[in-house]
Image (cartoon, rainbow, N blue to C red; front, side, top):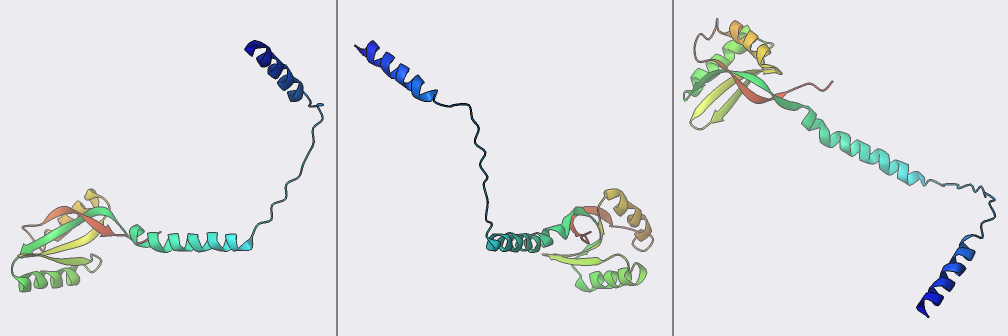
Length: 140
């Protein structure tokens, strides 16, 4: 009995499934775009630009640590020398208790930093070395 019902369902299913006459109907779909969606997309792009701008201004790189001392006045005097002798190298004064550290430059590669280190060694003969740091870059 189950087999007979199954065969009847199978046959009727095939009959109804094969009712396609082979003709193809071409239909056109018209999409009406809401102009507010385009405004939202532009606004989101603007927000993305503003929020990622700061992350593009800094990157991992290298700086030259010129001096590390507990004497604040000594570090400020060295910073003044840097300003006078190397105006193209931006100095960065950092206080990490109990030391003041003076770092200079924004170098993308260690080789760049080492070239400037040779020039700085005339002014600061000891205690200077290249360190990894987060540097400031100008967005292109």
